[in-house]
Length: 373
Image 1: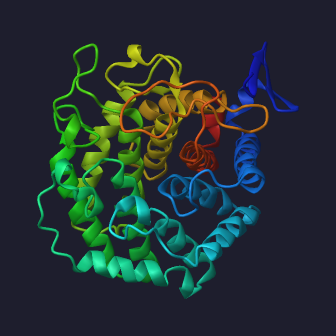
Image 2 (image 1 turned 90 degrees about the vertical axis):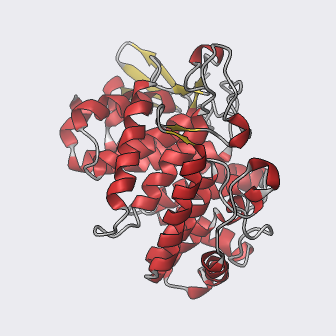
């Protein structure tokens, strides 16, 4: 049984009862975010970390926990992240130049902006300097182990450029951002399909087809990209020469993604063959809703067109939360579309959910009438 059961006009969430239209009330949004985040923190405290604390899976989760913690009176979530950083001595992963292993760097930089403690970014700054100094002239080829050196798979666009971009803003060093953008376009030239406005997961998928004969475009994979894109743009100066080009990419992808939303409000694991994966999937859905709401909050998307999309998406997300706060319908770790169940969960799905909730909370601060439409 999931957390939300609709009976008439009532919505039951855990041990509380809300009116059905309360899903868009700011207090409900905070409550459901607390419910999900507290379940995750309690699971870590009770059962330990399923993946290493420095791992990309948790790194993606930390981004959402930070976003919640940045809302006034939610500092306990920032404290939890500081404790994790201290446990790791603020280091990134062992595979220094693989994007997965420095995904956590974006959270370190964000925490530094709050606490101004240089130890939080000192190790990652050294790594970032090494990344900037590399020539980056090696062709991307999925077969040559390039993933350990550059961003040869689309997931990496949430892990690597974001980390460099947040460090750039935290240190006021444009070299990190410029390197992030340079390598963003290198990966885009390799994996982006301009006719579909979607990214292949990696080079091995360039010629693969789904059961219905269409190209294989993975929902969470493109969710990583779109969420990563807005997190890079968040750190760009208004006058940056690449800003308009990235905004155009974002808007092209947003049009495509919105057109692929399913009747249940979610995006299924395969974007172009949803019938083969008929169950909603919440990690891709969460990243899409987050990225689209970010665009609404920053004036890059039309409210009339995209508000109904994110409203339906939010409903799909909250109806996947279990009574205890566990987020379900998260596809397991993988590289392509796969089956999902109500009981499947993973930490990056929690991160996507919390990123969405915080952007929705911000949107309703400036568009209070939207909650009634």
